[in-house]
Image (cartoon, rainbow, N blue to C red; front, side):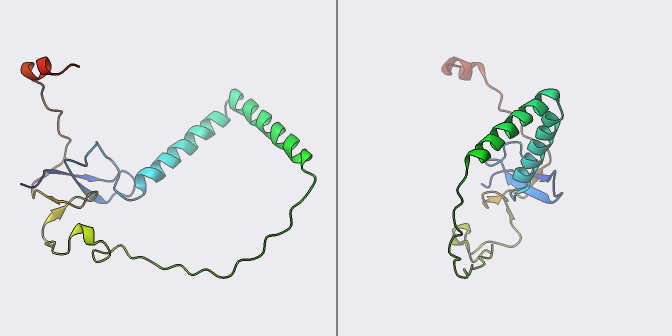
Length: 144
């Protein structure tokens, strides 16, 4: 039986994402770089807020003072490195043929997880699954 899946809209790029129960950890971003970009944006905002505080301005002034002191100590300069010749890069397309581990005989009408690419159930959830209810028997067997 195929695992159940959840469908949601990426909070950054607004594309629809299908994620299986095994990969779902409360994701709000797609499997592309959206989570990393959102994290970077959040860190930049936090750093900007910190730099605007009195403590942040003083720390920045101290750091710049130490940097300038280090630069004053450097009196020699290294020569330029020899220029390296032209380097060619090959473009690897992200196609099904370039990823044989996803399987070549996949049905076009089936629904697949966008993270692990496994086939999912046709009925999709919109909300999160609740954690399983722990029974009294389970509590007595578990040490926590």
